[in-house]
Image (tube, rainbow, N blue to C red; front, side, top):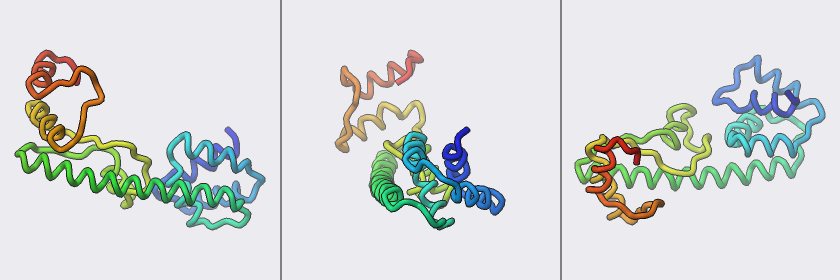
Length: 170
């Protein structure tokens, strides 16, 4: 394992215990390939945690371009997750208004639960659990709210219910 990979493993945590913080400081004092750190943090989608923990450690010698890139990624992720959280709230209200029980899964909800901060997880979509018997109605509510299917052909509530009764995943 490279020094950079070990550093990523240490920094990709919600909480950095003192012993691991010392190990991270030790690694940060060594010559690092900062481009590799950034590339791996992005590839593993842990750059929000890496960013936060590096800010907390505040080691000297972090290259300005690396810091700027991580700051920019953090701001973009924070904005995206804020928008996703707002949209999630809207969707849950819409479903509740239609009498459909729904629970958010993963994404911004998980980040808030694990880290107390929805910006510390990279998210790209909304995952919502609804009862099996309400999937068709939930699709109709979402379609009525401006959402669209990614799949062809377009299916409505009746088709979704038929697919689910046939044990075909949808």
